[in-house]
Length: 305
Ligand code: CP
Ligand code: NVA
Image 1: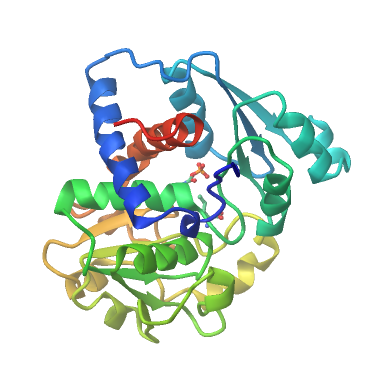
Image 2: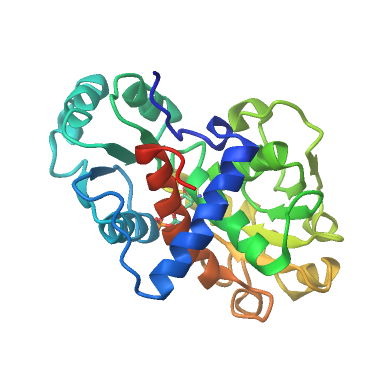
């Protein structure tokens, strides 16, 4: 039987996402009640980080331990991964010593090559192209606050990056719409985003128009990790793509605001929005833990009902 991976959101179905969310509710509830749940006792997660992280490392490491397992952190700086060992060789070795792997790296191709040689499931903890764990947590958070996302409108303001691409895939899988507004030259590339069609998203030149009637407004940093050399150029290009109160006023009255974090107040989001009543960014961050525990449970043990 072939090993299941989560290399991009498209790797799982609508029905599997529904299962993960059902399990996330149970797992979150147990966690809140300090009820021990150790289905992954004697199992090991290896986490490979080629980029910085706070939330992803913490949620996977704490999550694995809360499930009774062990999490091991490797980074490029002090492992052979940073010294030119082929990714295929690393995959052969690492996947013989653990039960599941999470990787944060640069090009999607790196994680794809690792997964091809891996004996165990591989989870994308962020690549230049995608961030599937983030969007699972974001949609779970939306559902907690507002119910089903099907048929809703999400406004994405800013860079058409890994998080944006994953929202666009989610829209196709779960049948909702994304209004995207990026500065000229930073538009969505449907092929890079891994999209099947173009009917679940619409591009807007003016970010205020993209927010019109939205159920959720979301954004991310102007410069993602790995693109720091473009920082100054991007600062100028993205100047008018700051989610502020006038933008939120164009959205529905009960619209939510989300940000995967870390955020830069005064750049992609105004403090009044980030810290305002429509913002659910802390719930969103917390839900990384619960949803990823459901994901670990599913990929290692299969379906538990
Ligand atoms: N949102 C997110 O993935 O955060 P980290 O970079 O801190 O892991
Ligand atoms: N788009 C950002 C997300 C960080 C969690 C980045 O890739 O740096």
